[in-house]
Image 1 (cartoon, one colour):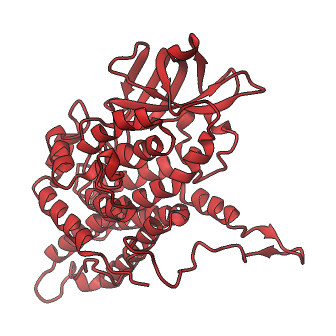
Image 2: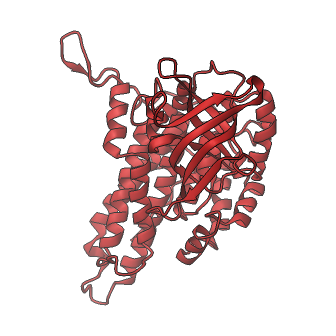
Image 3: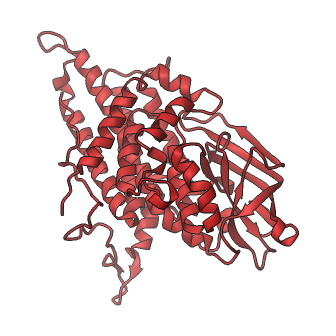
Length: 428
């Protein structure tokens, strides 16, 4: 299997790293995160215009570049390394693939070119903070129980005048970039409890009446969250009719979302490790006194191996999305451990004041709360693979685990880089 990055992927990485080099300082990140939108709008337009980030994985007929998850994963790794506040994950990973999969021709024509050009940001709103379950990462999304039940809980949808549209009533909490997105994809129930179905609806908050959006104060300010209240809000059904299996579409998209989140977490872990190495080296004193990096070299080496292993898993998942849940678990664990050491290794930075390690530490904690926890990601992946299925002898069988098997060759355009690819080396 060819595990090397392509020349195009290396160029995406180089272009993004150079572009973000001037804006990756803690002060720049904080100022961008504290704007009304939660990100630097001018930088977002530049990223959409030059590297074309939001349209990298969209089909060419929809205005995109026609690339794959691997190219978008490279971009997510670089934005994660810089802890860049941006609507890339909500727009390109969550919303756009669902519009491609479920939207009518008219909906795709109206929405996707604007998304690819960066003129329209979007996000997915699911009630109850149940995004990982809705995507099939920490639980079974079949039946839509994660979206509330019947006439109580979640978001309820009712048709108005047949073809005139729908009205939504309910609330969705912890919506990524929900306060600023120009388009909301809302998961809602329709019908009474016995016949309740979960469907996706398009809500345009800037023009639809009855939409109240409240920006929350998240643990990680570079990952803006909002509470979206729908009070008989105008909505449009995503798709041609209400017979589509939304839960299956969400689960199908979940693997790709997990792969991109894993790549972003790997980038954040690599960024934290680079800064830790630099701080440890800065503490070196003549004569090998306390503070010499040699005292912590083994721990730094362990962190490096952990980050590289997570990177390999993330890019394998970009090629094989069914492994996305496990890759995300490994990346979140690597990020948590690496950022914890980033606080401690240079002598302990504490939390008495803001330090460059703290934003990475908060990103680790917030991501595991939003998309994990790690043990649930692994548990669900194990159940899906049949790890705990009883065999004919009555014992648990691991024969169904196939996500870890590496095929003999890969299709063109779908790399699964390993730690020995063109990954950067951290030297002490």
